[in-house]
Length: 256
Image (cartoon, rainbow, N blue to C red):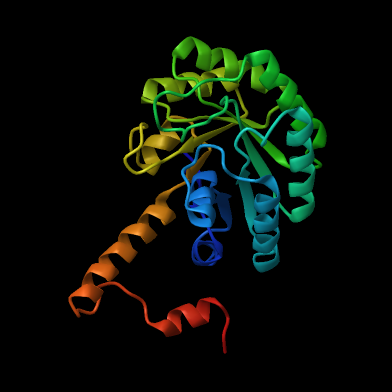
């Protein structure tokens, strides 16, 4: 049984350089990008030129790494989504994840999400597939109920998506159901600390037929916790535990 491929979610250049030392593929997290670049929640604030510029910087720094990019809902209608995907291909992305949430969107592991009507989403997905220029396209659904999950993943695979991701999938039975519904296409699972989905080991995920696991928020949440701990130590005059020496950061940035 083959273990799933792991893609850590990154949110800025330092997280990308750190993760790239451990993995040959990265997930460009919309949640992390919105939080780190704007200081705003993941509800639809990202401007697509900012994401394209970020991916360009990532590709320049990491020429050999896979970059799977979260493009939310494509930042607009089919024309905008197709344009963004063409630009991301030029910037150096290797794949995109396109979701079917209606705006105002919500983080995928929260309740209260609304879906774009399926015919409208298929129009957008088809525009992205026409524009992809070699990019892998993962169709994400935020459907929460079994019949709608199956209906949407079937439709997305039939349209030509390379794989599917069910955001905030709530139990292992639904993961297995999705695996059966999409046949040999790629099954992606998002492992979020404290999220709606169960926390599963690599062996459990492999047994469920998961091909790729993105840890979309782990680097961001780890950085936030580490910084908070270091700042508490600073206030009391203590040296923070687990803080790297500046030489480590200089080496990561390739400073001689």
